[in-house]
Image 1 (cartoon, rainbow, N blue to C red):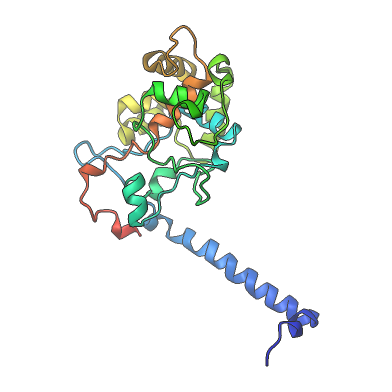
Image 2: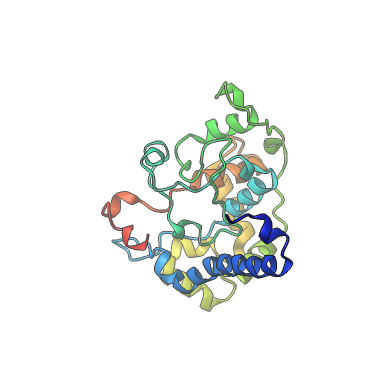
Length: 252
């Protein structure tokens, strides 16, 4: 009868089997990268032909940074699995393409709170502000902490260009040159391309914050503005009503 003790007491066998396990794990991680173009969906608008999944605008990106800073990811995943119960509760399962510009991505299965992959547009800006300020005032059973300082803290926009440049270096198609801008116009359309221009990032951020008035106070741009702008865009880029029900199965 085989005993695990025979491996643990034989250093040579333990080393060999450890290397085998690491090799298998490494192959599982590395091999799929060679088929990445076949597994990340190519999601284009059926009418315009533009890519519908775009990088975050400067305001949304700053909101995402705050989301990570405050540790929201420790309780909320952003990955709806292809199971019927998740489809009924959260909506269409998450696409790999929806996270291709996320650094780091927010996948996961640990949920102390609900998944947020499709929370965008589900609640009003006012609800989101109240929920972030005093969660139990809208969800009595919530165990989420209060974040009242977000609405009182002015958003630091001084380094937004540096943040976008850093993301550009890892593959996010923000533009700095005319050539890059024109490439984004062809890929996303002119309206989106303007929001991805690093040279006008701060102006674009302020314009979106004032137009959206996410925190209800148009007099200033707060961290609450940024975080709510980020939450409101989650899951809204792909309009699944424009695609056949089995359109994305080929990528699974």
